[in-house]
Each structure stands twice: as structure tokens, then as C-alpha cells.
Image 1 (cartoon, rainbow, N blue to C red):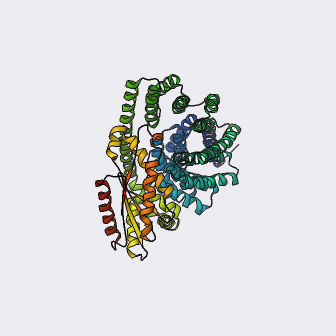
Image 2 (cartoon, helix red, strand yellow):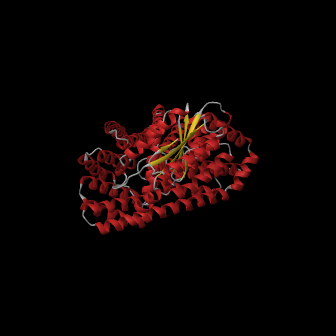
Image 3 (cartoon, helix red, strand yellow):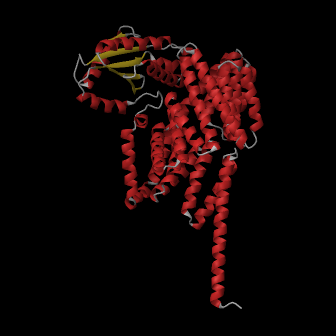
Length: 559
């Protein structure tokens, strides 16, 4: 017969066994949620992780709760719930930072960056992604390095810098392969293919069809590799993305039958899909039918896609659907309906711009709500200061990442902040240089007659042209609105020739790719160190010359 003390020991041992069993079950459930998220069942993964999170909070298991918040951020990204994901990941980042968990913080910050980009906040996204990579490098975690590097590549792709996006995406794929992670390899191959396609579209717009065709074929090849892995691992979510992307690539090179075949295969992977998937399928197929000249079929699909908006579809897709719907109506000769759809497309774009502003406000609120926690972290852990100092050093020493902080999101060019920093450097330099001021002619009429969305696409294309035409020693900056500044290195005598080449490239660009009937030209004013000493004085003279160029007829260079 057991003594009292013996009974107490037995009860205690049983409690320990029960606690261990519960912990093991929770870990298994968390792993099961991740498996679901890697096999296209993201809604189920989100539900399961949410249940684990609720239990962890009830038991006061903060570490487990932070891990749930981190994973939930990714599931939210997969199903298009970026703002919900942002709430979870912000909480996770603060917890990991407070407790010095650098590895977990790296993952959380990488997801944070990706969600910020999804919400159209590239400047904030690059800051989080570079922090994530710095942390991953410090703990030498190849998987976290792969994730963070991929996110940085996506940001370059978003900023229409496909060459840099390709370099970063290639590195992320290599890292995934080095650790044998098939899921990451698949996902990053999709993005690598997307970066190649962006480069191909730019080449086509620059009048280089053969190069564009070659790059799109490479995009198809890489996406096929990703598709093979998605099928091998049972990832229906990735398979749908692969097939939708390939359909788009085939459509762009005129192989419409192959594009349709991709969409037929797409339907085989629609089990466990959700509203966003269905909507993307419908408008992608509608776009292919428009390219194929099957306008009636396209209209039916696009109208069906429009009905899904209220059920949780993507608002960004909503904008594109109206754009394609206007094309479908135009192809059917229904010009009144085409005009109505185009007006709604314009209204939706303006509404989306307002939404972006509101998202920035909500993001500021999230930061405010967690401010006190951050202050505690800075007080209680010296490591936070060390990490911050290390990040600042990384920003100064790594050009490829530092430049991204100074990028204009729309054009991919440097921004006004970067110009201010360069002017400080130029003040003390002795080498000759020139400054050009560029302005898009009649830009207001572009916005008024074609829409602000088209206006943004024009500015984005101007950025592409500038990057493709300038010498490696020159730098292009978006000064504000439709105005650009170019810093031209070397002897001033060649600056006007470079600017004339820019002017001609803009005039000869195929603007019909953006919108039929669109024509764009630029006026340029140039000044150099022969005219003044300080960069601000040279800029002022260039601005006066720009005014002269516009006053004397536009579409010209005045030096």
C-alpha cells in the first residue's frame, strides 16, 4: 500500500506525463497545420493554427502563441488576408525581438515584409526584409536566408528591376536546394520565373521581340520545374499559381492554345481552392480569350469573376477585371458598355488609391498599439540595440539593399530622398557632372483622357526607358509627379546627346501596349558644372531650361 508521500509523487509524475503528452500533441498539430499550408489547404491550416493559438493564450504559453502568430501570417498571405496576417506577424516580431530569438524573428520579419508589399507598401517592406536577412545571416540559418532573400527579390520585381530580382531569386532557390527543402524550392522557382517574365515584357516594350520571347520561354521553363515539384509534393496552391502564370506567358507569346491547355489543367487542382483562386482563374481565362479574339466568352467569365468581389475576392483583381471587361465589350462592338466599364475601372483605381492611404493609417495604428512593448524591449535587452546598429551598418555597406530603401515604388527609380543624399556628396566633389530635368508633356491630359491608372503606367514605363538608355555612371531619380532628374557623370559636352537619346526613346516607345491612342513625349532641360558650382544651382538652371523647352514647343532638349 502506498504512503501519502508516495501517492503525491505518483500524482506529480502523472501530471508531468500529461503535460509532456499535451505539449507533444500541440507540436504535432502545429506541424500538421504547416503541412496543410504546404499542400494547398491554407484555410484548414489557418483554422487549425488559430485553435492552437487560442489554447496557447489560455494556458499563458507565449512562445507557442508567437509561433502560431508567425505561421498564421503566412497562411493569411496565401489566402489573400494580408491585413489580418499583418496583425499576427507584428505581434510575433515584437515577441521574438523582446526575447532575443533571432532565428524566429528572421522568419517573422520576412513574412512581415511580404505582407507589407502585398498591401502596396514597398518602402516599409524592404526595411523588414533587410532586417530579416541580417538576422538570418547572424544565426547562419539557410532556410531563413532563403526566405528573406526571396522576399527581397520579390520587392525588386515589384519595383520593376527584374535583373536584380533574378539575382536574388536565383540565390533563394540555391539556398533551398542546399538544404533539400522542396517546398521552398518550388515557391521560389515560381518567383524566379515571374522575374524573367517581367524582364521579357520590358524587352518587348523596348522593341526587342526576340529577347522578350527568349526570356518568356525561360520563365515557362522555370515555372514548369516548379510545377513538377508542386505535383510531387501535393501542393495544389502552388500548382494553380504555376499553371495560371504559364497561361499568361503563353498568351503573351501568341500561343493561345497552349495557354488554354494550362487553364484546363488548372481545373484539376481546384480542390481546396478558395474565392481568390476562383476569381483569378476566371479573369486570367478571360484575358486569354480576349487575346484570342473570343470576346463573348471573355465577357461571360469576367462578369462571373466580378460577382465574387463580395465573397472575398481581391480588390486589385476587381480593377483588372473592369479593364479587361472594357476590352471585351469593345471587341463585341458594345462601345457604350465599354466606356461604362472603363469609367468603373478608373473609379476603382481611385478607390484603390484611397484604400492604400487607409492601409498606411491602419499600419500606423498597429505600430502605435505596440509602441510600449517595443520600449520595454529596448530597455530590457541590449541585444536589440546591437541588432539595430548592425542593421544600420548593413544599410551603409550593402549597396543593393541600401539602394532599395531609396527607391520610388511606382517607377523603380531612385527617389527624392536619394537625390538629397547625392547632392550632399556632389557638393564636395571636384569632378564635372551635369543635371537634366525631365517632364512628361501634357501629363494632366493623359490622366484626364485615359485615367490615373494609365498615367501611373506611363510613369512606370518612363522609369523603364531611363534605366535602359542611361549609361552605367548615370543615375535617374523621380523628382515628383511627372518630373524626373538625371545625374550625368563626366564631361558636360556629352550630356545633351544622352538626353536627346532619352527624348527619342520615349517618343518611339510603343505606347499602344498600354492603351490605344496613347502618345507620350518628354521635354528636357540640361545644365552642368560649367554653369554653376552647387548642385542646387545647377538644378535650378536645368529647371529654367526645361521651362524654355516646354515654352518653345515641347518634345525637345534645351541645354
